[in-house]
Amino acid sequence: MTRKKLKDWVIPTLGIFILVGALFSYYLISNILNTNLVSDNSYVTDALVDNTIDVQNEVTEKEEVKIIKPYKGENITISKYYYNNEDEEDKQQKSLIRYQNIYMPNTGILYSSDQQFDIVPVLPGKVSEVKTDDILGNIIEIEHANNIVTIYQSVKDVKVKVGDEVTQDTIIATSGSNKLEGEKENCLHFEVYQEGSLTNPEEFLNSSNN
Image (cartoon, rainbow, N blue to C red):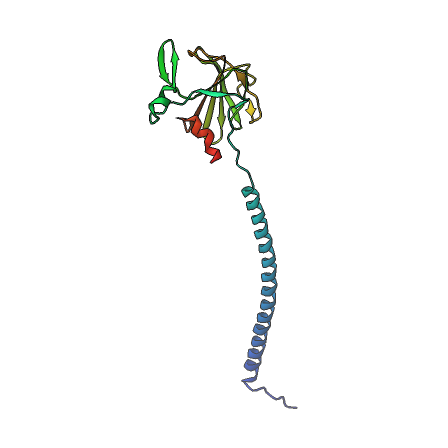
């Protein structure tokens, strides 16, 4: 019995068909997998975007703290204004303080009243210094955010100490006295520093009301 011999072109042709079939199957499987992956990624991306928007809204909704006056009470007036070289002569004269017949430009605002009043921080902060001056009496210094420092002078009944955290509702002292000539017994001398520089307290107090 004789065996038939396959022609030389048959085996290479079968190999080509098998290779083409394998490549076609791989292409179909790859498309299916890629479609599923794109769908899953889209779902995850949407979730992340939604979360980011929520966080941004929370930050935007935070209210800015308003600056308040450094006292609580009625019938409190300014007896001496902050001395400004650009003010008119009449106001400059009202901005001079006198001690032992020596006139000096006022570096803050001097509040006074016929009745005792409470002293409060104009912003939340931390008490950085409590001391006594021979002329201006008891002094409280408070550090705030944004390199702001406020100083409360001529006070009595000091109720805070260095390191205390205070809010705008904290009564830190009551109105007191000083040795400046012509001043009442119930006073507050208030100063403001921003970025280390002395600032007009009137402009500072009005800055958050514009």
